[in-house]
Image 1 (cartoon, rainbow, N blue to C red):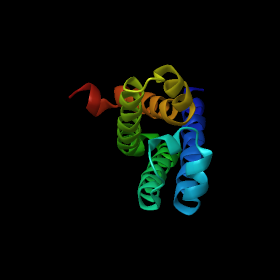
Image 2 (cartoon, rainbow, N blue to C red; image 1 turned 60 degrees about the vertical axis):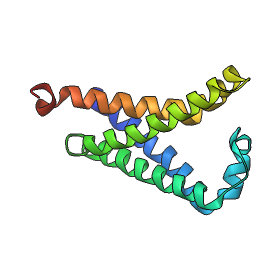
Image 3 (cartoon, helix red, strand yellow; image 1 turned 90 degrees about the horizontal axis):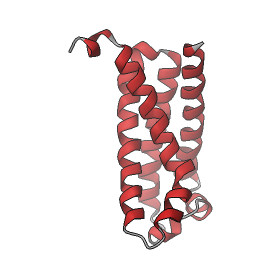
Length: 136
């Protein structure tokens, strides 16, 4: 049962992250205007949005690999979790510096914080089950 839940979660994250990454790569201006708060970060920069879109696609691939072969792919998932967590930390720091901190945190929860926490939880859970990690 646990394997099924982690597989479904990882596969779902892969689909969501891939959709976001593809939108950023191929419809960056639309993505920028559709995502709440994105225009508040400054003027649209197509190159920057595509760079981040590429990072999201890599994270999606890591999640898909983990869903398919969790024992072999958990280090890739850990790298994806690291990017998503650092990205979330930047959003937290920006929110703290904002006069609308609570609103910014709530706005960013579904698209930034939840994927970061989910990938981090999957990677940490798998790491704790890994023989090499336990005996390090």
